[in-house]
Amino acid sequence: MNSTFTKILRIVLGLGLIFFGVTKLIAFNIMPTHIYTGEAAIFIDSLSETGYILKVIGIFEILIGILLLFNKWVSFALILLAPITVNILLFHLFLDTPGLLVALVIVILNAVLIYKHWKVYRPLFH
Image 1: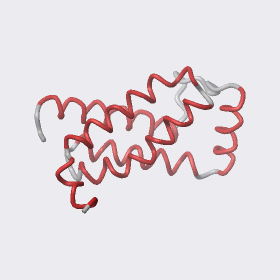
Image 2: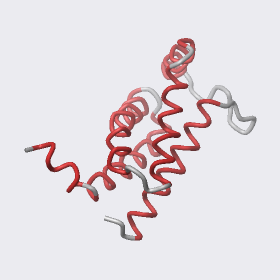
Image 3: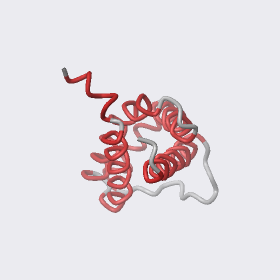
């Protein structure tokens, strides 16, 4: 469960989540303010207008990223990340196909790490 391969995947996923979570909370000058077009832009704008959804998602991504980086409650963090990962994939699949590669990387990293921790999840399915 703690092979070098698993550690690398966990750290890469954790760093990515922290980066994307922070970008939802803080506007960086290096990041374009409107990177989406069409229906994706309308969807993201509507989420932004709620005033809380993107901030909550950003906080969850940062929290999960920190848990993964510090190797604490990894199985719990991966399960928390699962619905976020599905939504990231569906958003990019249906609304923003240029970002699909990053979404697939996140899905694959999460799936591989869940597979590596499957012993913890096995009792949920009995």
